[in-house]
Length: 266
Image (cartoon, rainbow, N blue to C red; front, side):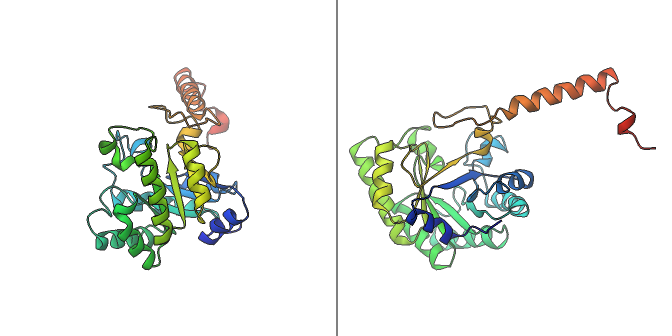
């Protein structure tokens, strides 16, 4: 499988080719997803919700991100490996931001980091890029700001927030980000931002005109059912398949149908 790099992602925008991204948190899923030629695997701090059972991403630590990144790296076959910087790993100081980004790359094996926010964290973005670590930006509904937003709400619907998102995208590009995730913003706004930038946009709930798309893999496979955002399309119902298989296993063990002779050693 050809190795995808930052340059691969940038070249796709110039060639008007869509970039494909899925979240991933473990070795087995990494092997399965990357075997199909996905461009980018994102070890998202959404693991707080879908793997650790938190109600949001705020409790996730740098250690959590490193642990899961190492597992994903072992199974990855060619995708660009990007890892989220979790809440409070970059906001306090530029020095903290660079140090934590470096840990995620050195200890976890990530090839780039993703960081939420615009102008307010631009010094951190520039410093991380200057430290030779590629950065993906993240604008719109930034889950680490859930308390500030008052919940999971679409962003960019007022003129003021629209203007800020356009401005933030521009400064992230200028600071050296090589791509920007746009989450839960109106389709027309995402289209305008995409057309203004030389770097690719990756949409999640941002409509049809972004340069690429990302979904949480547990959402698109129908495994995570606590809540399902409007923008999710379920490509399978793996959750129900798992439940049926487990129920069949329980029944067969109780009824003496498993194990059979072919499952035993001579």
